[in-house]
Image (tube, rainbow, N blue to C red; front, side, top):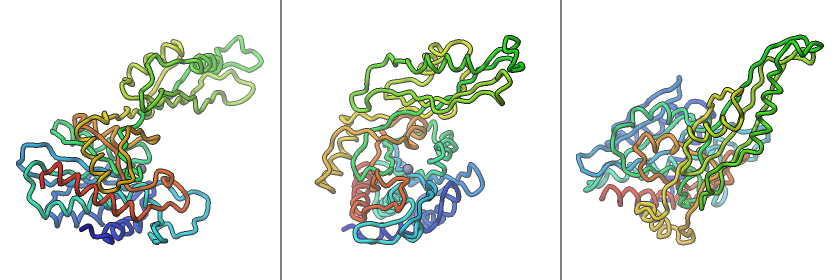
Amino acid sequence: MTDTTEVTELTRRLVAVPTVDADESAAQAVVAPLLERAGFTVRSHEHAPGRATLIAEWRTDLEAPPLCLSGHLDTVPLGAAPWQHDPYAGEPDGDRLHGRGTSDMKGGVAAMVLAAVRATAHRPRRAGLRLVLTAAEETGALGAHHVAPLLRGGCSGPLLIAEPTANQVVHGHKGALWLQARTTGITAHGSMPHLGDNAAYKLAHAVVRLADFAFPDTAHPVMGRPTLNVGTLSAGLNPNSVPDLATATVDVRTVAGQDHTEVLALLADRAGPEVDWEPLVDLPPVWTDPADEWARALGEIVTAVAPGIPYEPRTATFFTDAAVLAPALGAPPALICGPGEPSQAHATDEWCSIRRLEESLAIYERVVASWCGL
Ligand SMILES: [Zn+2]
């Protein structure tokens, strides 16, 4: 039987350590001793002071590659609106556990850690297990990027990410390609513009061309169409000078099957030769076919543990560490399934359903037992 209080208690202990764009190492100090005592080899990799990503491995000499469970330990800030509940107390209120990070995603991390610890009470007959608890996911998957080279080259089993899905199986998410577009010119006095070369005009023409850009790719059956948005535009220092520099930022959301290098080449062609491009964020789309054997196995486990949750192809609106970790691990099947409520991610008075927390522990225990052969 699943212990119904342990996962709530571990979530509360993680929530009590603020990790707002900082201090993931302090949150790791809560879970690392549990994993070490259970026999995991635990390594901590800092990309900045106090900002470590933890890799814990339950190694075996079995032939099948290890299952990889992953979640992030940072949270977003509290926001300007006042909270009714102490954001770091983890106060229960009926079925709701309140606090920053309960849904996104310390609840999911707590359930994964407990499932991993409990697995070690058994002898695996098929494969080992790896946990990757990342730092700085919310600010561009920096922790995942930092450890990606360490994960590369090895063989990996499936990747499961505990981002908030209310325990539904989510098969992927769009990619994010954020770009800076830049044009240059020659400055001159604003009363003599014919002596200059106006960078703003060049960029403005390019942006208008991008507004009409149509992706040649067909829509993805679940993710829909790729999108493009020009988010910022700036040029010039004052009214009476010809600007010699203009910049814009462009947010492209790609769907499975699109290659970011090809997308950038198409945009550059459309915008014209006067625009220079620099990628700011480059996270590829993630997609695992719902008919994939392991995806179906996870769907069956979820339906068995939580009968109200149907198995159907789903995509997330947010992006995850899977965009970085899955390519590093050699592109195994990658799925998202976590106890948090998607609507509560980044919200004031964030909460997580205690019932979903308990369900997720049972789901992860079964997933681990099934892959590792317990
Ligand atoms: Zn998250």
